[in-house]
Image 1 (cartoon, one colour):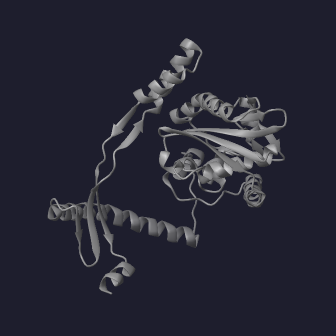
Image 2 (cartoon, one colour):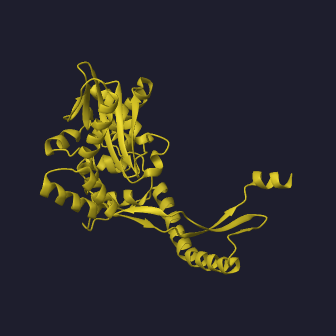
Image 3 (cartoon, one colour):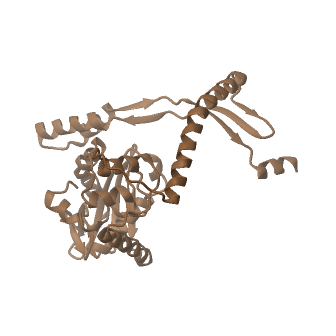
Length: 328
């Protein structure tokens, strides 16, 4: 669901359902530090083509869900968009509220993803946590997750788990307390966190701090050592890797007493060009004002290409347990 400026402002001091996976450290696109800096207004977030594509596909997925429900439910099924809901400093904006007949209600979460692998065994953990938080804030007992993943479309039912929610509330409260006290969350040590920190505190003010802090001196010394090792070892690493590859010739696998050397071809994969597809979808809506299912599928197919697998060279040590089993 595309949020208004008022909704975005409201969410700045809340922990929302879409942010819960980040706070738990299981969001592949954002770390707790990035979320913290965003909420403090110290960095900005770019809207990616993939995010736009998800927003554009949401009504289409909702229609698919509605059609599927009407085939299984005898009572009338209705979908209604939801405003941002709050419970104290907890927030959620469900994609839709589902009404079946006069008494039955639950929430709907729509997902469009090209990460098919994480959906093969059901709802991913990050989406499960998001659904739980929605139920807490909206005071519901069920969320239906409708997902278009890869070439499939499925609906999963997620039921409320109050024990899980108690743990989630503790983690969320700690994050909010740190937010109020301006205490940065623990870092993961990944490149995008460095980028976020540079966006926040990157400065050219000429100021200098003289420090004898022992931890800082030790960390700076170790980083200097690693920089030197990496520069030296990268060249040696490439040289040895090339020499082994020459030795290997056309053998797919070589086993030594200590190592397994492989050169396997990865499986072909699908590549989805979200930015181009989003432009076509915008043109379709602007021209027709509709979301014809056949046209959406045609656009998706048009901007999906097969990427041929590649050969991946690797050297792995044989584990002691495996080695002992072979000797036994």
